Image (cartoon, rainbow, N blue to C red; front, side, top):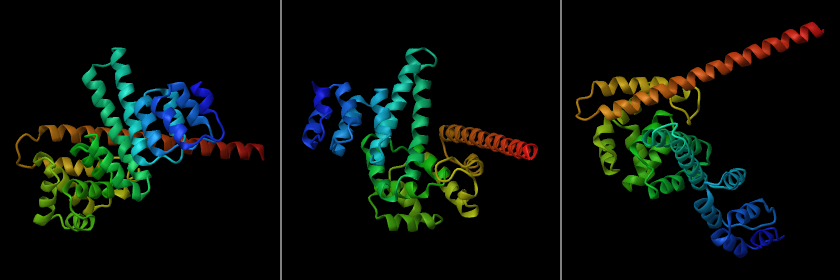
Length: 281
């Protein structure tokens, strides 16, 4: 009966909201596939909350072009958690390692999502991350080491409560005491301060956009510079930060090798295509 109602054309917003709130998973899937249904964003968010772990509903939501960045991130988080639980249940990995890998994959997807989203959606995404406790120092550092300065500055502004223009001024002049004051006001840990300072200095000397991947992938050369700077830093309990940076370096090197292999395959395919054309001629 719920599915029959969800197929109606047209389907009013209030009815769609009722199905999203109390309907079964099948009815919600029918609702999402109904092109004549008027579905409010809060109803979509409710379906993500209730059935984001269901593959068919998740795929139907990902296909929509009207989803804002916070909703897409909620779907990514659901997918990461579902995969981690699946791997753990199969005993392919220990629970702690599975969830750590899933968290890293989710953070990677978050930075990519922020880079691909319109500028106006960056702050709502950051507020969504804050509300869910996912705006961590590790995620902010990943964004900075990917060259996503916008996400980094917006995060500092949100966490510190300072105007974005003022934060940008301090970031551009990170040699002064103002940047450290903003960093501390944002509540970021003192143990990660050397990495953020070294990352900004590295960006000044060489643009991160010179490396491939846009603002969504880690930059290997930047990470190497930051690693070198942090190893010389005189601050206690820095080993967890170095471990994180080494994981970033491994990920960046793996991505770089993958891109290199893809380029070689593309070059070979182009060469074979040219040879076939000459033979045909």
